[in-house]
Image 1 (cartoon, rainbow, N blue to C red):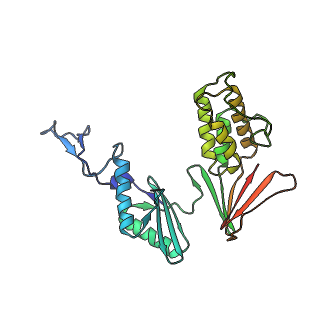
Image 2: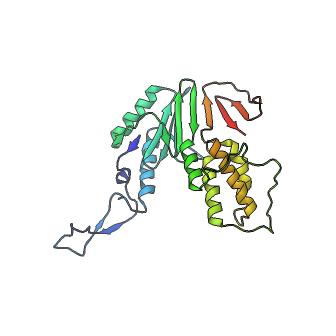
Image 3: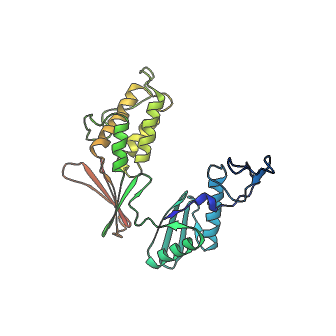
Length: 270
């Protein structure tokens, strides 16, 4: 769901004045200014004012705001659960009861001008495939763009994100590399870990040396990216299985680790 002209729905708590727009200057009062009652796009207060308006509206309609993630809203009714995640003017929502979904659509559409985009398939770089037996989340497109961004699309692929024999250290005697480039690589990879738990440890280790990266650190980060290049279609599989046990096993060649947990199954290759 998308809120049309979201910021124009928000009310300002502060006194904000603007100059008369060019082409709309009052000939009798050219030096007067306008006092805003609602936010405008480009106004620094607009995002906060919009979020406060939306939060108050949802809370008044019995939705509970998340205690950790303040952009998450939940509504429970016995065994039924409704969840809505807000990102500026985009709202991702779902429920265990389709009636609750329609009620949310009706409530929001009555208060705001909305457009329904349909079933979630792409959001903030995440590609979502909703199947009969579960949901598959991947960042394949983002991963491919990441590899291309750092010029490693033609580099040889690696079977693992980090060498089992290499032990990274501060490498005080090593040659320093450009910090901006190194930090850019780390930042890009950190976002990829949202759907790639198989690189989380390796990226975390390399992230320790952002203050003064050396060639050895840069080489390790490039290895992770080369690994990503060969596994760009990997992701996380959330099944509808409600098995409460946690199980781990590997395939015949030891390349794949499968973790099965309550109500979901996460698949990552190492």
